[in-house]
Amino acid sequence: MPLLDLANIACGFHAGDAATMVRTVQLAKKHHKLVGAHPGLPDKEGFGRRLMDIPAETLYAQVLYQVGALKAVLDAEGMRLNHIKPHGKLYRMIKDDEAVGRACMRAISTFGVPFVGLPGTRHEALCEEFGVEFVPEFFPDLWYDDEGQTVPIL
Image 1 (cartoon, helix red, strand yellow):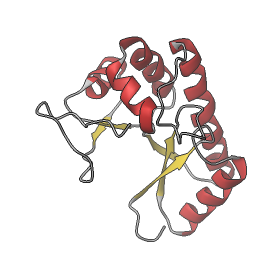
Image 2: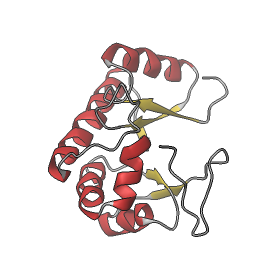
Image 3: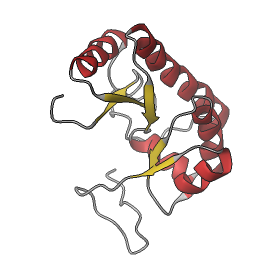
Image 4: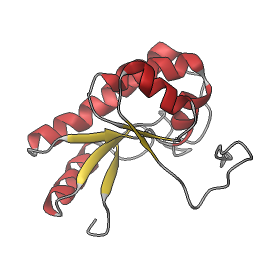
């Protein structure tokens, strides 16, 4: 934790659980780190990296639920939610599936914090459409195609 700038904390669906979220937020607080929500698909076995056929409106509810849970932990510790950065396959689905992207961004916009995503993609366009601040990121450990898109891990 001392080496991080920002801590993306899993919200229980792809990894972690309530007790782990509390301990991790407390550790971030101890080290004066900003905390973001890292919601994912309900896929602990596949670490949130497998495509799942989940209706967009269900994903809307799942993102609200996950980020809301972390926000409650942060509130209890006197900290604030700094950003939202979806995990794994959900991150890609928001970028690649219009209905999923719109539903998830609707949930994300509820929290009034920036979205961390891939520049030049629907991540950025959805943020503009929903009035959400966009924070671009780059993955130095991933491959990119000729259009600047990350190549899927799975």
